[in-house]
Length: 250
Image (cartoon, rainbow, N blue to C red; front, side, top):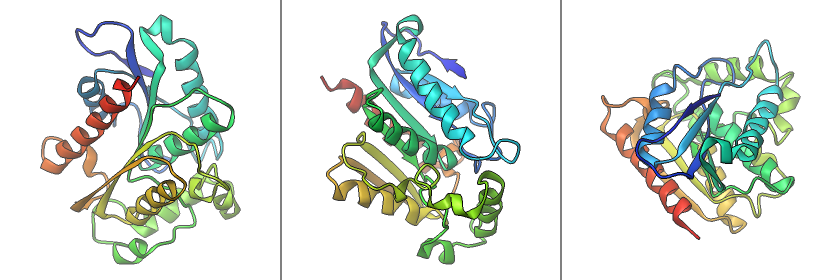
């Protein structure tokens, strides 16, 4: 993990465990360093960015195991990190959004750590690769295509059968009730648009508090395109505000 602390904040501060994107195959602490720094500065929370194992060398569920272990470690060591173990959230984009959603479910199922918020930015929620957005934006809309998602899936999962496992496809879980409140961000022109929208709807149906925001005209990976894209900054600010509200609750 790479740890970030906010400037001039009185300890203990909230903590956010962050999982970077990259299809469970690429991406690193360095490629998403700027997002992690902004998240730390914008929320006033300590951020732990997780260098989880990836495919094809380390197939599913290695990344899931690493990410949940990271959350447990941050919670157990919060006092030594200057963080508040009662104010912890998770954040991830794309594959990282998938991992954040799965980790939130694991935390619910094992009785903790109790999360204040799960922040999911254009998350992969169904590795079956279904939805109208897969057809509408299959190619020609930035770096993520349907073919690329097939490539990522084949390098991450042990077989296509793993797509039915909720730890790979969190929307397949039997019950989403009582999982942590969520903010879900999607990009309109993204093959993963429907994954995020469907997940937000599924959470809402079982009574989980959800804030959902779709950014019109945006493509996959726009969240990190600061300062070139105005809505990248706007989306980051939406996420920061959601964490601040969650951490301010008694």
